[in-house]
Image (spheres, each protein chain N blue to C red):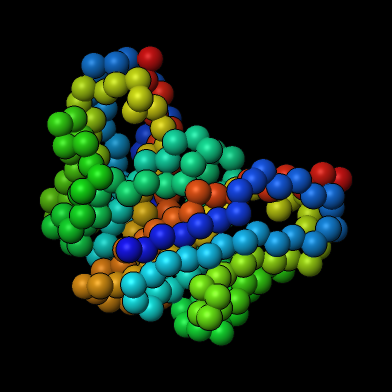
Length: 115
Length: 114
């Protein structure tokens, strides 16, 4: 079964440093999502792409977070500078466009620790 | 607006006990409903789904029925196993412009003891 690929699996960084996460969705999935999940909570949407366009980034802290999906396939999420409160799991997911019952398919996430 | 409310945990059951995790939703349109499961250190995995009223989703012994009259989608399993220990998330999706928007509950942690 096709999977959403994410890297790195774990990342430890010092505060004020820059960090980047990469995601490759399931082939053919035009909609890509980045979520942040704090331990013990549900996923929180950061940004949603339709092909290469951002369709929802209302919860993205734009002073330090950026996301791109230049060719409408893989995507990068960047944090600069990282803060202690950014420690969380960052999950990428994808779904089919135009299919109302299409579920989200998640990657295994990147566990970020900011020291 | 759209939202999902889940039964708070944690839930601890003995092996072979009956499981119910309650989920209710608020939606502006006609959502699809999902249950996801998350094992420690992993991403969320789809457990089951239902796309219209009275549909029953089922997988691995788990079931949930889309109840429009009570706006509910409760998860049930007749006999839980230790391997079912995980966090369970209820979610809904709507497609206001063709692309799906998802809303998640806060999750319910289940521990099954032998």
